[in-house]
Image (cartoon, rainbow, N blue to C red):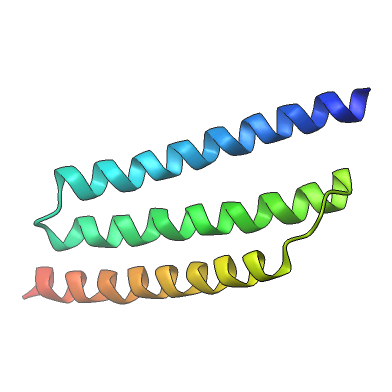
Length: 100
């Protein structure tokens, strides 16, 4: 009974985190889509969203013995690396443009 309640709380918390990260992406993209700095932020929050999907699946598998989605985790891990790399690359480009 206690495990079922904690699993429901865990799912509610992770779902809330997904919604928050998705809203951050939409807000940053919608309000600041013409600036280069906003693209860095969109890539960063996208990376955080993909990373949270991987972490929540691994956590639920380890603690609640749910099914592990291997291909989903590999795809989201690759997307996390790509978005974080792109954010870091664009951040350095924006910094160089600001220095000029």
